[in-house]
Picture 1 (cartoon, rainbow, N blue to C red):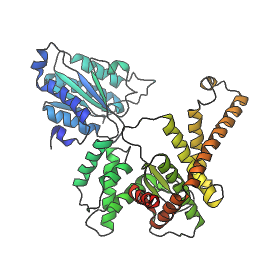
Picture 2: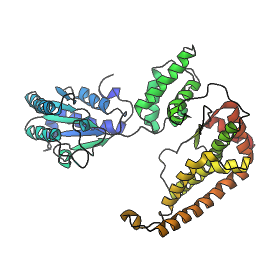
Picture 3: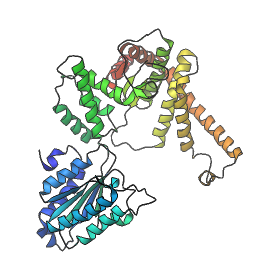
Picture 4: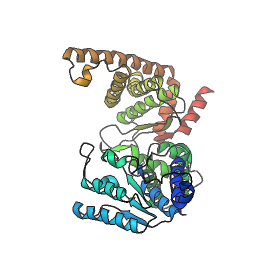
Length: 425
């Protein structure tokens, strides 16, 4: 594949770049319209999204002389290289200057954005105005650039690449899977739900890790279970409070810790499924050491908009873990301290923080802080009682998911749907 055919998904971003590419390939038809030719475009976004691949696709599509610039020299020598690169581009115009990882050209931050490297780029672009030189650049973070560099006439367009979602995510997953030898049980939807919010690089890494699971087991095909293990081991399930690991295949069901961990996670699951049916993608437990090693992965519907109701659901869902331990075991869940803290923060935000403008200025009295904390505690307790009510009312569903989780260690949204259907019959 060549040009934009090599980029999977990102249709809107590709369409924007193709318009710019067409203006470089057919300048005469745009000049007839009395238009000024664009000078440059910046692609930015978090690492691992394929910005360099997108820029290379643009360059390949345009088929013009291209001068690739990436910082590999000390600052003084590199500034000279910037100047020399633009001079070569002018001599070869129409041409393209490709500034890869431009935010790495200088060690500046958003408070100190006058680096000599960026001044040299501005000068290079300005000196090329009478020539057909187009600049395409990539960056993880554009905040370190001076405003003068990003103004119209230098970079006429900035395009943000975001984590792929929905159909884009599905296309990328299918592309990576097409390069692997997989079993027929592999479900794209499950992988997409597990990898929601993850970059292309992370997705490719997890799929490759699944292949390592299969190869180590002596199989010549990658199974659905391999993908599930790879995703959980690399993304979600903790070991020793820092690293990640799955079960080794053995689990002591008589261990109070295992049963409490399972109840903790199922508390999240039941509350989530009652408030937002089908929202749980995966729930898993682990027992490799001290601490809490279970996880519940929630999936929001595509195109959803945050609302007060959804935020309140998040609060109740977080409190479901502690509610489950109280209802099932009649004890306080020491594993839910993080959930409680996060729920309190959400409640504080939902209720306006209770601190008023003084919080922003730093002038908050101890008395006001105490009152605010008390009010948050009162509201958290109200939401907690809702979580308890959901667990009590849906105890049959809780018990069914709980026992199945202890048996299988990991349940997907399909497993949960089967259990719900059986309970509702």
